[in-house]
Picture 1 (cartoon, rainbow, N blue to C red):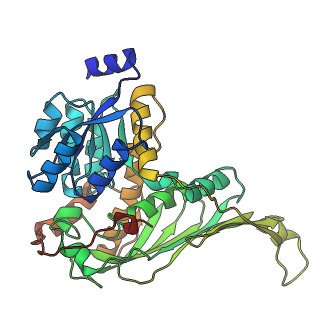
Picture 2: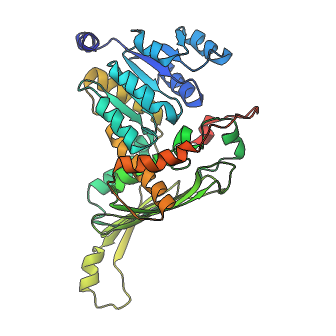
Picture 3: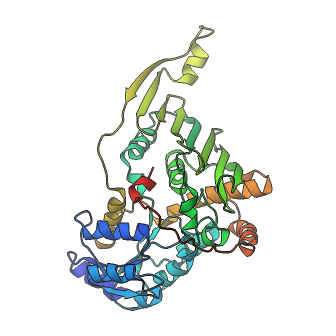
Length: 397
């Protein structure tokens, strides 16, 4: 590790040597970004997948690098300064711990692990000079970045209510059938909340903060032949007394994407396409105490602040990871910040299982025991021999 860091400091223009672990759909997409002009100062120097399939061999040959069927051999090869882990969630802990222990920088696909306990283990393994980032790419989506700027500037005042209905994550049965790990307790530690909605939960807490309590309600295999949740509704309470709700589903079509953040001075509303800022004149609390109009309400000013620029989100995060290694650029999504969204997702599930309201932060080992009971009775499914039509662009919301 020391020699790697020294060489990088002495020759900042040398590209980061990156190993990609996992050659599934998302891994291949990341490879495409890195090999294009979208990512700078980074070269793929090795790849790894569980089997030496024709597809894996073709990818390795096309890049001109060695393919490893054991990720540990890639990490130990000396060919890489960093790794991008793009494998099923069940392997994140094992692979992340190994790479971090060997001194490599790590960029990991979401989520950080199956549980907060796994996330804590990974964070504890990071060395002081290692860059450890998470692919929380929606943080650079222009609409959410704009909302973050407005909220952080205090434009909305103290938050009163939050709400996100995110039910346009529809997935047909074939999505689950072609995978052995997806939508199993042992393979993913959950379903909708840890796979699709982890991005939304991260953005929700990034914008509005982490709630102090969560009450969750889930449908398990409600719309699909799976054992984990494909529908979730949660009620949040925040430290200042604000309330929030979150609704997600992979069984609803066409689905809804509506996010509202309401404060004393106004609100932000996003309907999946248009972002509106409504400002109260004066603030609600002032008007409430001062008006003599029994049925009145503050005047308002509504502004369309929808950003029009397009961003290659995954490429931005990869570039940021590379620049953090080379130039100590602050990370957009440090792995440590992946704990909060994971905790909220875990709390929703735990609440749904127990019927209890879960207070955050909770004891990660207590949740792990509850999850382990689910994992004990879970098995990976047998993948169906189906030729699926895959359009990764259609998978994003």
